[in-house]
Structure formats: C-alpha cells, structure tokens
Length: 451
Ligand code: F0G
Image (cartoon, rainbow, N blue to C red; front, side, top):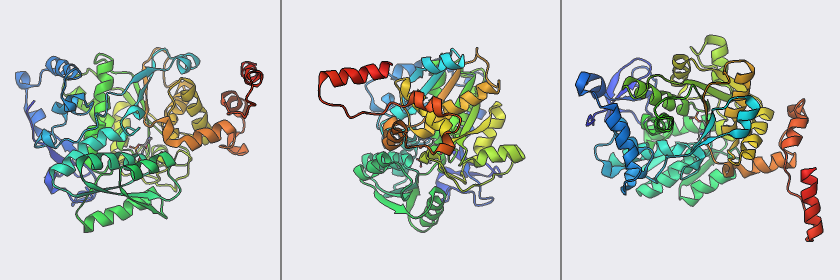
C-alpha cells in the first residue's frame, strides 16, 4: 500500500484536519476532543485494488530477517499500516517491539486456562510499551522540525521520550509528580539527558500545566493525546495476531491509566479486521487500580458515557491517574469488542505481581493488574477454560525494584489491605536473609526454604 496520506479525525465531532494543522495540545478546535489518525486511501481502495493480506503477512515476516534497522523494528516492520511519515529517513528507532509472547504455565494451571499468555512489553529498549508509541511520534517531531519535545509522565513515557529524543538529537522536557514515580524511571530520564522537573502536582496536574506550556512555546507534545503515539502503540496488536498465525486470541487484558494503550490496541485490531487481515477482534478488557478507577466508575454509572474523575491513589504509580485523557476512545474499544472494565485492590496487585515473578518473567506493579483482573473475570465466569487469553505486561520488573523488595520484606501492604489474604501473601514472599558465610549456614537456609 502506498497510500502515504493520512489525516486526523476528531473523536468527538468527526471534524477532519491535515496532520500539520493540529493544535499544539492536539485538541479539536471545534469541540475540544482528541484526534485519531485516519488513512482515507484505505477505504477508497475496493475489490482487487485492496492490499493483498497474504502478501502483507509474508512481507512483514520476511523483514525480520532483513539487515535494515527499520525492518528490525517491531513498529516499522508494519509500516504499510502506519504511513505517517513523508520520509522514512526521519524514523527514529531503537529497534523497539518484536517483544516475546510467553506462556504462563503456573497461572494457566491454577486458573484452568490452557492458552494463557503474556505479551511482555517490558522487554522493549527502555523497558516499557511506551517505546512503540515513542518511535512513531518522535519521528513525526523530527520530520516537522521541532527542537524541543515534552511530556508529563508517571515515569515510563518520560524514560522512553528521553531516550528517543537523545537518539533524534532533540532536546526534551519531562514533568513528573514529585515523589510519586519509581526511581528506575527517574534515573532513565536523567541518564538520557532530559530537563527533568519534579512538580508538586499529580500526573493530571503535570499534564494540565504542560498543555499550557505547549500552547505558548514551540514544543512538541509527546503524551498519548498525540495521535501518532497511538499509531506506534497499535503495532503489538499486529504482533499478537501474527504470533497466533492471524487467528486472534479470544481475550486481551490491558492495564488502564491514561487509557492510550487500550485505545491503541483496539485501533490496531479494528484496522486488521477492516483490512481483512483477521476474521474477528478479541474482547479487550481494561483493568484499573481500585484507588485510580475513573473508567470503572464511568462504566458502573453510565456504561462509559461520561467520565467520573477521581483523586488517584495506588502504589502502582504508573497508573496513578484520576482524569484519563483517552477515556472516550478506550470506552469505545471495550463496548465494541464486548470486553469488561474492572478494578483490583492493592493486595490483589501485589499478589499478582509476585505470581508473574514466580513465572520467571516479572513485571512492574501496573502490569500485574492484568493477572489480578483475569482472576476476577474467571471467578465471574466471564472467561471460559477453552479460550485463549493474552495479558499485556506493560513494564519491566526492574522499573520499580523498591515495590518488589517491600513486598518480599513484608513492608508493602498494611494489615488492613492484606486482611483475608495473609496466607497467600506469606506463601509468595521470598525475603533475602542475612546468613553466616559458612557452607552449613547456607545449606540450612536452603532447607528452610524447602520446608
Ligand atoms: N502500565 C505501565 C507500566 C505504564 O507506565 C502505564 C502508563 C500504563 C500501564 C497505563 O497505560 O496510560 O496508556 O492507559 N504510563 C504513563 C506514563 C501514564 O507516563 O508513563 P495508559
């Protein structure tokens, strides 16, 4: 497909504008909603003129063995489905994507679901799914000639932006809530050379402030309100479909924070379906932390018709967001695909995270909401044993080592939070012990573990 023409369509009023006409805050001038990238050429091509699904699938697989850097990217490998650049020479890549899809044997057995997998987006260059979106939007920033890029973040977006800006030779500004992001993520922004401002505000406050700043200065906004981010973040949907030989799984379970990721994955599967590359779409369910659950409330009160913003509190700091920007898009994905929107408690998140660790994978707390949510869906009978389920693990376990250590030391959760789950938590804790430097003492420590 050489339809190198895209436009932006407002998700609220349907107004269409050219990509270069977007306002700096990516809000519609008519109704204030967000935009979605649209490729008019796709719907104009009918019958034999349609792209050949078999040829595309072959091409995408072949690229994996090419020697071109862009072909090694799990985003740009699928470039026919994200023709957002005038020139591919502007693409900024760290060879993101192509992340592993792991079977989860232990959880599979406990839950009685044979076909249970984790798509580990934490195995990206900066350790989170944000890299797939950042390669796309940073390339646009470079092509449009910006010198500065910026984001508000709970940590992972800033880590990804800082790295890709450094690769692109651009300068970057990070706004983060002071004391509310994991150290691993903060260290990345510093290491890759961003101007990092820790603000006395939460994520929602940081994003509000940044919106004012980009309206005053020539800075390219790289939060997921930027529709090009979602074009990159839709590509894991293509990888998942490819991994199942283009038979999509029955269920995809995604953590919900600012709700860009669930929106992007939904768009990815929708486009595969519209282009005839897959026969159906998976049910997409979004899981939030109980203390940061505006979309869950919205579904309870109005079935996703109006947002119910909250003041967010959760130790899963990545998803500590009370007023998510992309809630309308995510609500549509859940409604269209027949998915669910649930929340999980702090104890459920901590237990699920330890279980993902015990599979030999590990993930950050925000990613573990997917397994915690799956357990609830199974208990409610929403998922059948014979179905295929994919959990999106969004961040690497090393992003938030403090959380993991606190859990295993037994200092993470309060008594109130753990009530009723004490035995389960004890069974998962693996604290490090101080042991005398003798063979006998070390062997005794091993015996204790076996017993
Ligand atoms: N998981 C992780 C590890 C995240 O970092 C985020 C979001 C999410 C899930 C939720 O994704 O916002 O698209 O619904 N992190 C953002 C950040 C907000 O600034 O890094 P979402």
